[in-house]
Image (cartoon, rainbow, N blue to C red):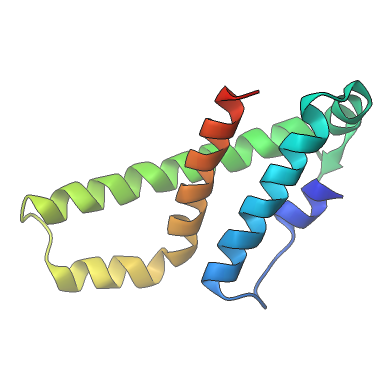
Length: 115
């Protein structure tokens, strides 16, 4: 059920709440599978949108990683003066979800290194 909730559309949540809920779901998922072979098997056999659970998680991770790289590029460009504040605001409006997912990817990466 953690995977379903992780990938569930959370439009009714504010951006901050979406981020917090996703982090909590990822932490729960990690704790459920970390030392329990039965839960690991359930995750391995799970599916989401015609994909295996692990495949869906990897696809989501790669999306979050892409968002991370875009955010880093925007930040570097702003710091070096290559991007104006107005263009960053426009980008931020268009990629608010990407910023949330960027942070989640970093958390996933850190959590994965602790497994």
